[in-house]
Amino acid sequence: MRFYSGNIVLKRWRMEWVHLKSDLLAATGLTNELAHVYLAVAIQLFIAWSTRLSVASAKPLAVVLALELVNEWFDVRHVGGFDAMQGHHWEGAIWDVVHTMAIPVLLFVLSRWAPDLLVREKAQLPGENAQESGDEPPD
Image (cartoon, rainbow, N blue to C red):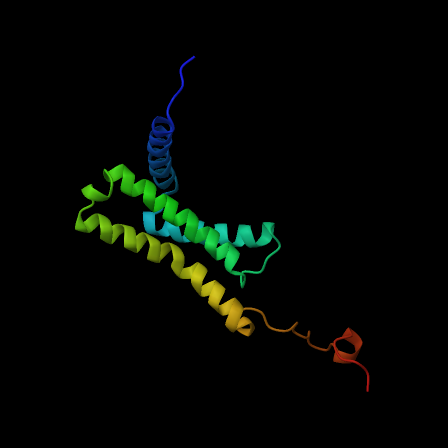
């Protein structure tokens, strides 16, 4: 029985992750930046839903940030580590984080400090009396 060191297993998984991302981008036709945006919002909403937290909670946003940083760490390691990072690699990594976090941060900020922009009170249907709908107490 052969035992692999954690480094070998991690390296193999890292390579498979890079190929998986490439295959997903090719299959969907999405750009890297757009895939980051879509996945970040989907992850934020899924975490909020599955934990029964609001998007106004920092926890779903923190999960998105943590996963994005892990993804960028894999990208850095794929390039050859921090020592091999050129200027354009750093620029790409920074833009990936900015693109990934932009809409989740916007959703977090709006839902926390301006929730009326996202959800208004229940609209009244034409011809519906507020007293009949039970929205307002009778005088």
